[in-house]
Length: 320
Length: 291
Image 1: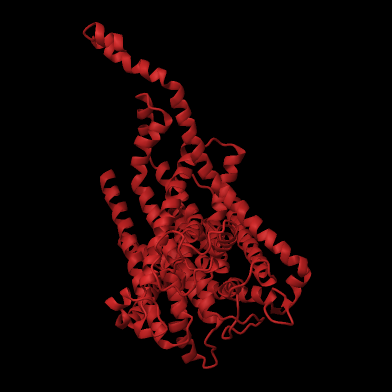
Image 2 (image 1 turned 30 degrees about the vertical axis):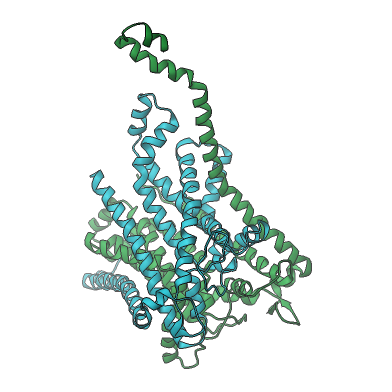
């Protein structure tokens, strides 16, 4: 390099070669540089695995500590949940029942409205309608859950009370309604995606046979997209199981097995919040209960998510 | 198909059913819009009278007329800044690794499965992880950093999934052109793939961060629900956040505090609306450039 610069007028040729030589000389360090960056990015990606393992380890270790005091049989079969006061009972069934009630209630609202909106969006709505409804659904999906809790407590509950005077101020019904509103956009947009993936030739074939739009939707398009639709239901249920703030605010803190939606109940998530609002020392049995309940919650949602994936893979109809 | 052939011969009846079905679907869809409107009108009507300069500049108080959300507003700002600081570099790097570098090994498949599963884990479980690992094990206490780390883990799958989509959308001709000029893999990614994918990445990241702003449960788990009448001065300080303050007010029995909660909700929704507006703006601008 330096000799070329000093000795003579640089020709066009030497000017072109010089940077290449420099590049080759630095080749070794550049490779290390490349590999180093790749390694760092790999570690960032690996963090997801570490987090997954971390969740399992944290939930498992604390839950095992809990199950040293309470047998797993009692935990799953006792019908009473009084973990904080003597005499203590650690039967998770009332919390599971509360969660189940919210899930069923929210499904009753979220699934029919969600699938109807999905069908409307994909089969009937004009492009302009879509451009109005899609953002509305996105906004509904983006509203924080604590806002829905406020809405349940200050709007839905008084409304219920005016119809059913026996309604408790904290009740499962109002929480179910807002959780239903929460899962509705998810069901709608997933159904919309699934329905739009059905090729038009199927619709046209059915129309050619003289079917009405209703028959085309319900007997051709919906069956063809059924795997995606069912998967969206399962994901919605999983979301309702894990929903926390709305049920904490609106459904109450009374763990009991009941079928009356106008009574106060407690869900698994609401119990976890209730305990963590107090100042429970680490290592105490109260502290461990939330991890046992959390582990159960994690298992239920994980199972639901895996099931949804399974449905999507196994029963997908593939069209060219 | 045999069903269709056996359908009632009464054509008028079938068309009536078809019309009823369409109307029902349309009505239920519009029901969503009505719900949104009712929710917004209700919160606005309850909260607007309380929303003034004093509300924004006062600290929380036992007396509703003196209560404000200054500490919550600043706490949210601190929390989100640190969450962005942690989650964006890690999330984007993970997305680039998975899209540009990863070969189909067993470990990489495991990473993909983990991300898909983490996206479905309830937020409160992240709070329990944060409580056990950041607050207790790493002894960070109930600090801004502990909260931001918990939130980062929560939104990381969202950022990774959105960024991967953006990186995948970059046409391979751009990469090939860069390689043809002698660029290395990292140079190609750094100077060509990332800039092309940036608007998609930014949009996805803003949406993920706006989810973090509204999340309450993980923060309650790590113990952020305390009376905080000061603005955090550093990352190790205690803090409160907007949704926490709203939850605090909603869970009191007095009517006035519910109205304060509504005022807080208006502030929170305005913040979210602004962030979403920015995201939509960036998305539309980039679409215009492309076409």
